[in-house]
Image (cartoon, rainbow, N blue to C red; front, side, top):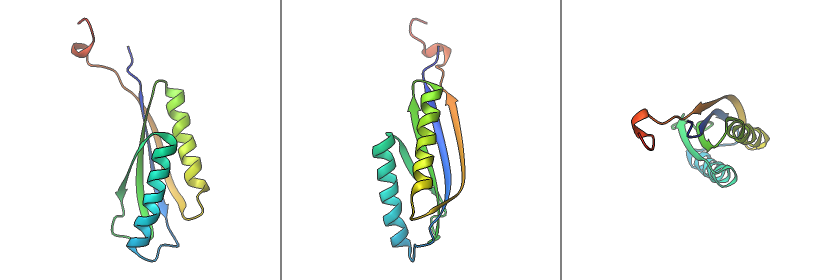
Length: 108
C-alpha cells in the first residue's frame, strides 16, 4: 500500500542583476511565492545565503502518483528556466515513494 509520492527539486541559481542581498531577497521572495502558488509546493532557500548573485533553492511537492509528481517538478523547473532575472546553473530532481510503517497501517 502506497501513501503517495514526494518530489524534490533542488536548483542552483545565478542572479547576475542582483546588486545587493536586499535585491536578491526581493527576487527570491517573488520566485518562492510564485512557485508555491502555481505548483502547491514548499520552497526554501537552502544555500548561498550570504552571496548576492547566488542562491540555492529546494522545492518539495506531494502527489498521488509518481508520474503526477514528476510532471509537477518538471513544470516547476521549466518555469525557473524561463525566468529572465536569473539563470539556472544546476538542478536535480528526485521522486520518492512514501509507504506507511507496518504498525501504522489501518487494521493492523
